[in-house]
Length: 141
Ligand code: FES
Image (tube, rainbow, N blue to C red; front, side, top):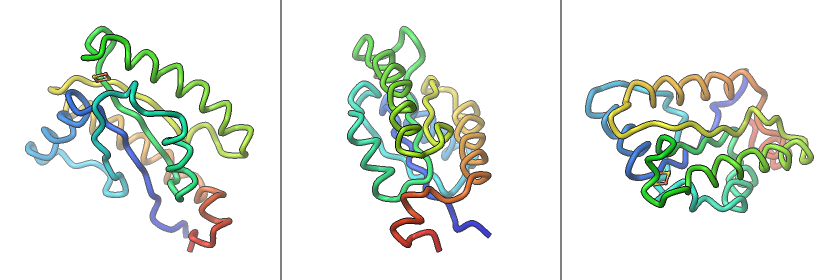
């Protein structure tokens, strides 16, 4: 049996984090393997931060931000989408499945959409073996 996965969700404070918070207030639950990290904007998530999360043993990482046209820093979410695409290519070269990284977008009011997207992502990660980085470090047990 696979160990409990470790999933990091970088969530834009004004939208995705607020949606996750609203989900909590509404008692709309999502996968407990998800650790949410509040960030000012998805555009602030440097590629090195995502790679560091994998290096530290994350089995999956998602970045959740504002809807198109609603980023409070104008185009941070668009930049983040491009970075995720580029990072998927890097993951592939490193031998990690690209399914381990995803970006999705929600508004602050979309608690159930947040739950649905986060839960679907977590289910995908649970279907994968532990990250090879985690196994290599002897943390897969
Ligand atoms: Fe939310 Fe930029 S402020 S993605």
